[in-house]
Each structure stands twice: as C-alpha cells, then as structure tokens.
Length: 365
Ligand code: V47
Image 1: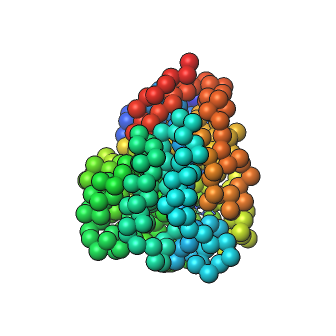
Image 2 (image 1 turned 90 degrees about the vertical axis):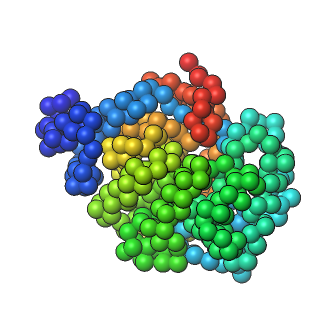
C-alpha cells in the first residue's frame, strides 16, 4: 500500500501521517487535488483506526425544526423562507412538545433542534422551547441552535454570547450542532449568504461555548462554488480553534443539495467528492475526535463506504429531516437502528450506540 500511495505522489504525506505529524494547508490542497481516492482512503483509515479503532457510533435522535422563517435567505438553502411566504411556518410551544410526546415510546436520547433567523420571536420563545422539551422528556439531551442562531439570541437577550449561553444552559441546552458554518471564506459568504454571521464570528461563538463547558459540532457545506483552498482554510480555522479549546466533538461535511435553491444550476456532488471530503477532513482535523458521515446527505450506502475512508460516526435515526429534503434529498427522512447496525457491521466495524457526548450506551457485537 505504501508503494501505491507513493505512486500517487503522496508518499511524503504518508510519512507525516505515520509519524503523527500535522499536515500543512498545502498538504490539504494536494490531497483534495488527488484523484487517487484509495490512497486518500488508506491514509484517512490509518488515522481513523488510530483514534477510534473499529468503533463506529450512532445515536437515537429526533430532529425538530421549530420554524423555517429566516431573514438570511441564503442562496444555497431551500428551507429558509420569508415571513410572508406561503410555506413559512413557526411552531408554537405545544406543537413542539407534542412532537416530543409522539416519540416517548422510542429510546430517543438527543433532540436536534434548529430553525431560521426569525425576525420577531422573543428570547423567551427559545428558553420556553428548551424548558418545554425537558418537561416532556427530562432525560433527553437537547442539541440546539447553531452558532448563527446563538449570536442572534444574544442580540435578543441584549447580553454577551457567554451570558446568553448560561441562560440557555439553565433552560436545558446541552450542546450546539455544527450548522451555519457553510464555508468561512468571506468571498463565499458574500456570494451565497451575505446576511449570515461572518465565518470568524461563527468560530468565536463556538469558542465561547466551549469555554462555558458547552460542546459543539462543526460542519462545512461543500460542492458549490468553493475552491479547494477555501475548503482547506475552513478546516484549518476549525483545527486552530480546537487547539485552543478542545470543545468540538465532531466534524460533519455537508454535501450541497441544489434543488429548490437559488443555486439550482449546480450539479449534485459526486461519490468521489463525498469520500474525499470525509478523508481530507479526517487527515487535516487531527485534533477532532469524530468525523461523521451524515447518511441523510450522502445516502446510507455512501455513508457505509465512508466508514473505510475516515468516518467513525453515522449520526443517527434522525426522524423527520427537513432541511436537506426541501433541497431535493432522495434519502429517507429517518432510518431504523437495526439498519444502522447492519450497515456498520457489514463494513467490518463495531456498532456502538452512543449518547451525544459519545458515552457508550450499547455495543452491538
Ligand atoms: O446549517 C442548508 C446546511 C445545515 C443546504 O451537528 C444545506 O451533528 C446541503 O448542520 N444542501 C443543517 N446542506 C444540517 C446540519 C447538521 C446535520 C446533521 C448533523 C449535524 C450535527 C448538523 O445544512 C445548515 C446548512 O449549513 N444546508 N442548505 C443544502 N441545500
């Protein structure tokens, strides 16, 4: 295999990986530029097995999107709608509580809850959501509000991000999902999501959360107009932040779905690019404990293969995914744990049901 990687022109990168040395940004750009997916996969798998062995995680989770009303209206997003749009919605507290009640007979451990940047819901709406969910399901971990929403909530609360997070934590917030990161490069934000929180501020919010003991995830939306250099700069910004705080749990590459968006002329990502984003993330993000293959976006079959290309987590049962399905995802909106375990075992890995903070709940041998 070493010869094979050398013939792909990546022998020096393999040497660094074997020595446990950090890859440079120019290494990252070369990895993205390589068309030898097996060489990338071999190297990413070395790191994956060094960090996580054969362990492959999943969680019983439920997604709730409390509202799609959004003032940002990003060009790549089919979910966010103007308040006057006929498909605009916002759930009242009782509706959200009912959604949680509806699944009380399922062993859901995490509720993943995000929405748009709503122009006029008050801060109390968000704390009531957290408290209401906890009333119905006290043991559930709430992973809610992207760093973009957190910055918005701090504005509503007229407090610092840190003080706002303390209030949200008291109301039931457990951790923060990785959405809203998109691609940090100002060029990309100007062209695709000019109203959104700038990339630097997204990273600042994440770091403040970590300093307040709140773990977060991180994502990157790939497969639109970003360059390979911009992808690597995004990963490097996350790696630098993680060096400072160690608060990120997982990185999730998000494959762009163009349907029903203002960027619908762009083609869907290819299988090779999906695998490359998993592999390069695993290689560059040497300080991230977990890389997720999000089956909703790349499909369960590709997610299964990604487990040999650097990924060690398949996300979870999900239940009612909306954001990607509005943008044309053809995957199911939920998946059974039996299917997840089968996909993981078939790829020669050990399936582990986890909680949000990666504590083992059950090993499926
Ligand atoms: O914030 C928006 C992205 C995110 C599209 O933290 C799109 O564990 C693809 O962040 N095509 C929401 N992506 C999903 C997300 C997520 C999912 C699973 C797990 C975790 C985690 C986080 O999806 C948005 C945005 O970045 N997005 N539109 C689109 N058309």
